[in-house]
Length: 233
Image 1: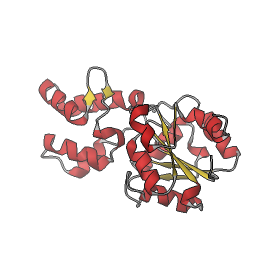
Image 2 (image 1 turned 45 degrees about the vertical axis):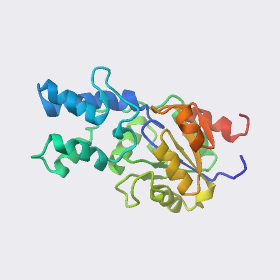
Image 3 (image 1 turned 60 degrees about the vertical axis):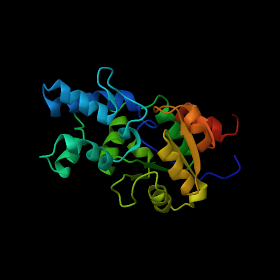
């Protein structure tokens, strides 16, 4: 550690919450609900979204993993030509009563420890800001974060640096004093372009080999952050 860290920015899906166990079943249910009994259409839509329908798991190349809701709407639109983009966007906002985000083990303890140290804390996600706030609330993490930046918060989406820079501005810290923690190349690229420390975690679908050249460090999960920041790894 050669730079002082004053704030930590976290991606949400695949970083704070387990991506596959949270979104895989939701994706399969959404496809079945929208396609009805048409199995051929179900499979075609699953292929377009990069979802293994039987296993209820997203494939590494899926645009859903790191993309914005607009990216997903673009994929869905050809299958539902009579529905507006706004209607389809609404399908991507899961009901909090039927969607259960699964936090990564150790995430609460990690974030609480950083909060106790007085570090700035923000979530920077390509999901809707309102959805991100709902998910943090469901996981019991909401009180630990100062700011939540979604793709619709006015700063654009990752891998553009805008969301990260917007979070730093809101937190009142210089970008170079921030670490951005994420599970995808979108997260790491956004961090690099914002002048932040890119930290990769392996709780998404990307492998260490895919992430290592783009990150200052690759950790198993956010639970390993305190040890890394202490300089003991």
